[in-house]
Image 1 (cartoon, rainbow, N blue to C red):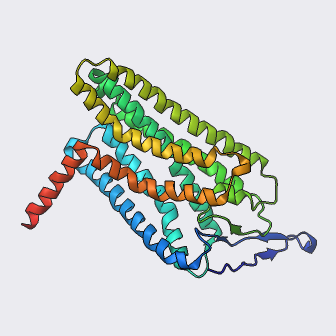
Image 2 (cartoon, rainbow, N blue to C red):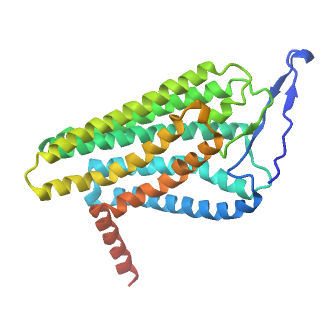
Image 3 (cartoon, helix red, strand yellow):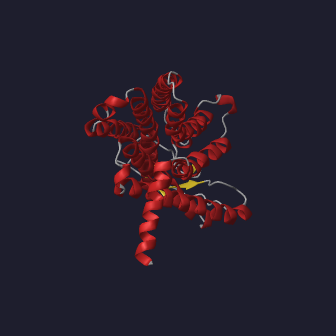
Length: 328
């Protein structure tokens, strides 16, 4: 695919021709690959992955909403996890798929800002929703008699509202800081979506304050959310090892297996992307990691929870049986 550089429009303010400000109307996304022969296979592959992700996460949202046996705090959090997975994959995948078959990989200026804002909102929310789910498992296993009291509906809503509000505020701060800066006419983004790091390379003004904000909050988000998960699972492990019943230990492990799998996959990917030495940092490496957590992980999460969870499988079987009875 041939990239065509769009010449930005220059306007003069206050009649001062010698101090023109360049106004960008769109960006060019470099895309996933520079090889035209790979674009059609990639389009087919990623279309299948995104379709499976949409069907799986929508199915999980609907199933946990309509099935009476899945009205517990665990499935309340799982429903929001599915919503978040659907959100950040949909913020990136549709435009990426269009660009794989389009002649020119352009994205309007405002759409780029919106894509960045929504992506940051959902990815940060996912970290803290997973932390809330770890806390939920800790209460269920370590304090089963107080579970319904501790994990009340009010507490559950608080545990998902706070991450949403915090993520929205941080998303707006980063997006506004980047898009209020000057791009100096550079509009080629070395990525397949509008991410913060590639956008920073296009700024001609100082990026130190923006980089500092991203660094501090990225470290805080990763470490604090992971710390909650680790502490919760250390306490869970101690409680499980103290159980006398082998059946009880197996049941406790099985309720945590799906969540722990999702946590490990996501955090390994994020640490691989953000905690690598600057000398070895590569946008090509970022693309691979980004494909994994924007497309693969949202597809895997509903599969992990449906294949490893007897209650979800039971709910699917009941709903399928009802559908068969209707048409029989």
